[in-house]
Image (cartoon, rainbow, N blue to C red; front, side):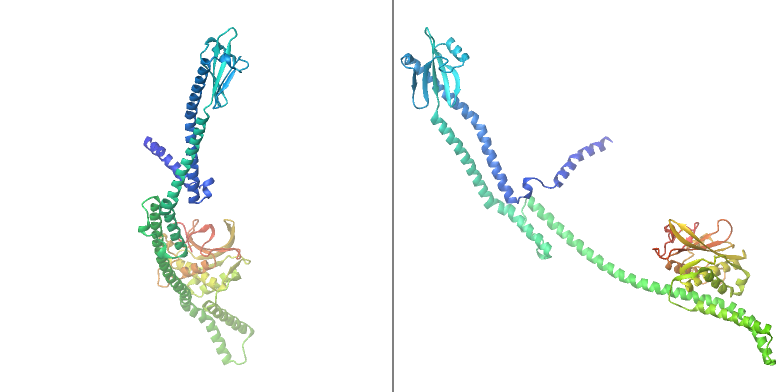
Length: 529
């Protein structure tokens, strides 16, 4: 823990530096070009240097000048004392030096300085500065003390100092000018402006798609920070081009795979259509034996009646004629049912009578003589409506009911298959639930997870094609529904549940039912399409 804390603490300055480097440039220099920035910084530096020199030299020069002027005033005072100032009241040299004799009031002397001079007669006392003059005072002893005030100003020296300041400024500005000329004409064009222009030309080549000019030649890359930027830029361009080539190759492979997938999907769709047709033909083939037996009885009745007509041309009785009519109608219904089941029509979804669809499917299943031993019960409400393709859903219910009948017949357990329907609501959506349930042994967990795969059959004899449930699942999925298979938890038997959208105008994803069920549930739960 302490090591981690130390590591975190050491990373904080680096993080702060990164944030400071990534911050956008702001201020006066942000909008200037490099040349203007350099000129501005050079000018600012030279002015600052001049100001610093003036500030640094002025106090020392002023102090030296002040001492020289006080010394000159003292010399003037000593000379005045030697010349008997009582003979004259004042004197001026005309070169910045003068003296006057008078009282403290006339000489405008402060009381403290006058008292100090009186205590030290004939001794020069510093009286401060008056403008540009240094002043020195001395007391002349006598009955009435008098004072002599000497003033001195080194005008020529001050002029020299002023010229010194001016020459200093000129020298600094001249040095700045020489530096600017050297930078602008010799250093910057070769080491700054030139590399920047080369990078700009290379970037413009990238924008124009001129790949032959987008890299900066190694011979033109300097060995400084700009050179590092150029090398990094060249490396970035090379990586981008390499990634573009890899991406183009990936797109080519993707296009080939997409075309191949499109072809395979087309073949798969054709195979699925052929699968449904094969299942329909297989169902017709399995119905053929039952159909022959189903036709024998009414044909025997018709045969007897036609023989009687041949023997007695006078005709038949009313009862016999009615019997013949019923037999013919029965044969007609059988023929129409088989033709409707065998006829291939284009898919067409519309609102249909669900109970009638189930009745038609049960009629077709009952053609099989062995299916008559199983009780088929239609509990679908008469007002139940489903938005579907009627012919294809007849095939769905034929497959589901026949699958249940065969399971009951082969296991010897159970004798009832019932179909029921109700409207349910799941996840805020209304669904039509149609269940095909039997009271047989149920579905083995070993095959529950693969029940809707093609060529999977649970029947013990050779009659199972393995296509019925796969075709039924595909038809239900095409209608935006889902087909579920599970064992009845309350009693023995299997339950196949069809869930269809109750609102045909709603947006339903094909192959996905309520609650977003997947198509590969766990075997112990339920199986659906």
